[in-house]
Image (cartoon, rainbow, N blue to C red; front, side, top):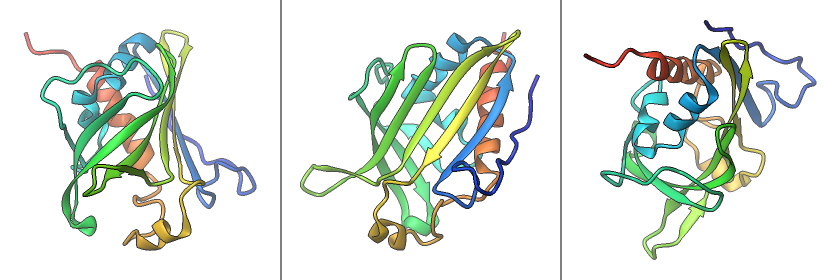
Length: 178
C-alpha cells in the first residue's frame, strides 16, 4: 500500500524551489519495523535508489539509539571524485517515530565538518501501515559548500526522495528468503 508524494504549492517552504525537499509515502509496515531498518547503519544502503550509499564503515555497527551518536557510511559519487566516507551525527531521535542526521566529512586532522544539510524520517501510524515523511534540508548549507557541489543543490533530481522511499518500502516489506 503506497501513496505517491505530492508537490506543495510554490510558496510553501517544502516546495522543490526552496532549500528543503519532502516526500511522503505510506508503507505497509509498522513504525517499529521501519524504524529498525533506519536505526541500523548497516542497512542504510537499502534506502538508496541508486549506488550512492554503499556500506557501513563498521562491519557490525551498533544501532542508532540517541541524539549525538555518530555512524559512518561508505559512499560513491563520480561527480564528487568517486569513493568517500560520510560521518553522520544523529540530530533527531524519538524511538519508533523520528530519526535524523547531519552528514559530515572527516578531515585529514580527524575533525568532522558537517555540510549544513540534514536527512530526517518521521513515522506516523496510518491505518494498517505507516506514513513516512522523508525530509532533506540544506537551509544551513554555506554558499561556499553550495558552490563546491558539482551539480548544485540538491545533488539529486526531484524524484530522488520518492525513489528513496520506494526503496525503503521494498526493503521493509520484502519477504526474507526461506
